[in-house]
Length: 256
Length: 351
Image (cartoon, rainbow over all chains, first blue to last red; front, top):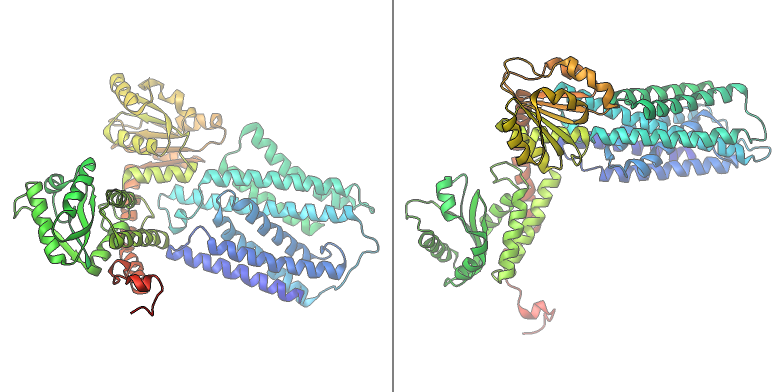
């Protein structure tokens, strides 16, 4: 049943993206009412998948790459609903959907071809659970910041070209995207800090590689935020950095 | 009893006629009472704007009511018989016309929203004067629903329709809202004034005016509630403003890439929007190559405005489709027959 939930969630996000693209092309996109509804529906299916997997493992369902990808996707969606809506960035959801669809498609293929099955812990370590959950929630925030950065670059390109396309009128203003990027990176850095700190309290110490990679990701984001406070990064630079930093964070996750 | 509409608008009458027929706002309640006093007019609403003068109403004999209204208007406003050609709509055509007006389809600037507020005001004035009853109440309530539906489900409002509105829309795309945005005008020409006023109407403040003739700069600064500076000082203020409007008569570029590049570091990442409405151009086109600097000249703004107008024109049929769907699904409430007082009470068995 867990895989059914995952497939349903993936189809919902794909459908949401397709509908939004059609609505944008025909000019009928209305601040994403349908889009938000589909994001909520997708989130419900994602949550049901994670619950089933959690019941199977009797712990936080982060025991393999597929579950990690779904957890990051879940974080992206929940942060979009919590943060994106607050900043009137309904289109952020549309831009998030391809990423979520991609991550979950990988997860489906992986689970269908080789589901490692139940992996209950010998003893439950709340610090390990905390470490994994906080770190991956941070990835959700970083992913969403990268998506906001992509939207900012699209808008910048349209403004520079002097011939705004259809998407131009639906994109949020650059200032909102800039603010959203900063806030999401700040939220992500805060969550990652909690993840890193909790790693030091785990019953079994993480490997040096694990800590080094995690520390490097933390340093990248802390560096961006510090430079921004000290010198004031240009929106375009911040957008590029948000995309580059998230790409680095994803590669780092693969290394771990 | 049915509904009707009588009027002239910017398409059917020149401004010389419209201004003679325009109702003074304060006199509308008085006119409504007089119109209600006509033999056959049961209800009335007067919509008088700079682009139209229309009277909507309900009567048992619409043809007679329309003749009486024409007579009233020509007599009251001293318009000769052959001077003005009023359009007349009855029943469904009258409702359809009002729905198009409320949707901005009949406006000079297609899709504009001001007319919606003007209709609301006209209706409220008539209602408070006691000139409306069941039919006009239903008709106008429906027109508000249709107007909202057309605007929300089509792109009739999308895009800019003038150079000024294109500049404002672009500024809002960069800065979000214009409250607190600082504007500098280089060259106190008419176009600068109009564009600055558009920006100011959307919340821009701290307007700095620089002009070769300092007196002219002071005059415009006073008019816009800003500050005048000497022409050779404008570069010193470039790091303090968000939007620059340039419209000097200079034969060569006034704002160079190096001027702008110099201040970018001091701007700490804040975007700069340059509007060059001068011919010959005041701002070097290579300024647009700088990061977070957006330069638009008069032709580029005009192209956006033209595209916006064309886009809105393409939407007319879609909007009419929304109105047609609304009418076929819901009908016109104002044309429904009067419910009998027994059925209204739910007493259907009463003889």
